[in-house]
Image (cartoon, rainbow, N blue to C red; front, top):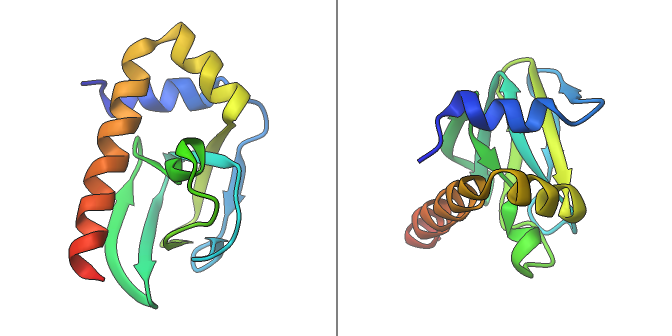
Length: 122
């Protein structure tokens, strides 16, 4: 399993991280998307049907469903505190996986754990 520090380093290699203020929506449930995010600094609340179901922190990855064929976001992500996020589109993700194959395993594990938690909530 990769450490949060290694995850952050993969996302830090990408130019122009996105900065979100506390309370700012990153994406909404039902929106289409084509990027996954890694938290470089800060915390993000994950909401389903308007209720916070999880808070994730620096080093965690979210929004990966769009890379496995899920067309629309299955939850809303909102910056809990001022946050800096790295992001990868499909091409960037494939490149990161080629450079660091264990990264793919971490993203899949994170995605499957979150999906499992969300299915038990809904």
